[in-house]
Image (tube, rainbow, N blue to C red; front, side):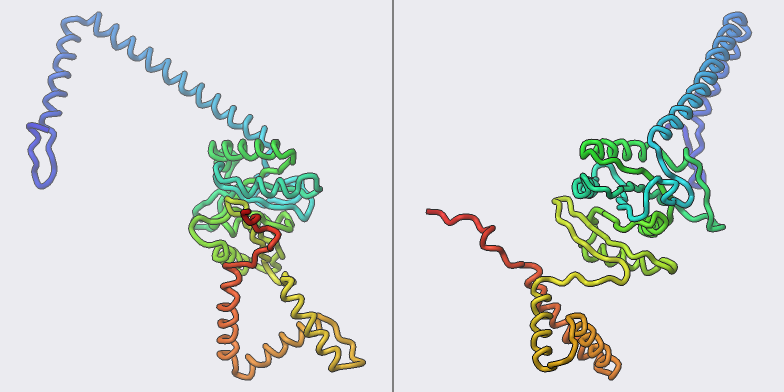
Length: 326
């Protein structure tokens, strides 16, 4: 600005000061030459200021009351520790974490899958927080349920109504997203978590990160099924914790052939399919214990490379091929 010299890197607002001085001088002259008009103007200004302050105060109280009304309409569970009783569901529910109202495709998939069944769905939003110095934090409903959550849950309820399946709503606070989701699943005794796929990493890497978060949980850790849906509707199923593997038809055929071969070689012995698996695992464990871990690791790496091609290019059922042109 003109007339503003800079001294030691600091701009001195002389121009602004001169403007202020001129305006102040005019005001003082008006006060002594036209006292009645000046006092009337000051009185009018004070009256307007008071009216605006009272109006703003009433508006804040009205908005606070409306927020409580909207909060009550959602029938929201948001205790410090969510339980099946506080949320209103039985153990074995399906937990669906949501974060944005424009990415609810996994919720739609979960609702369509359980439509007509007795399965109960809990929709969870995790509010990310910074841990205080004491490591503890307490939030009241106004802090925990904002306009963003209202918009999100409004969309959730609209989707649930469209699918004809009621849902329970819950909000939890956590410093880590999946720590909050897994803790809620444990407290609610949920059987399954249904999540959307990440836009930042492949589904397998996302599942691995979630698995690591599960490993960091204190004992006893719950055994959970993790279902991840992509925006195009593709479903991936993983299991958190010890679980029975899902064998493919080819793997079951191999197991059965091994059982037939060993049954012929061991007549009179009681041999089951699970005995073959147990024996194979025991032999693998023995090889590692005897110092052959590197060799086993190399064989496993080679096996993964061989099946990678089949995973990327699964066989196509001839029935699903398009008809040949005439």
